[in-house]
Length: 148
Image 1 (spheres, rainbow, N blue to C red):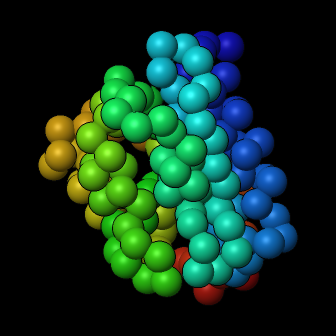
Image 2: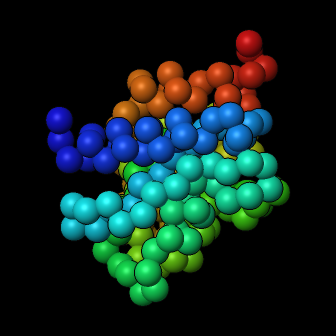
């Protein structure tokens, strides 16, 4: 197992901690890493409270840079009950790379979160841990619920 796979597995485990309190939001996990060490982690909180990325970012010491984020679902691009997680990652200024397990099928997002990150110069990798993320998140994703 590579180091990146290890960190994504930690993010997946973090996402499972969100259930059932996060519902109807999907149980997303985020791990922030610097130089091979987990610096912060977060999972989606109850509706109206922070998403995984925002919670992890809130745990960081000020001014930290050189970070890689491992996120189980594409960061949201839109402001709903909470602000955009993609924009929060960009605003932080210390995120250099983001690993996204799966893209969000919600038509309000569907690649827009990744575009925000890329346009800000953040390197994005998609698909690490995708099979497990789809297993963990699939039934909770907005677009998927219409099919079930």
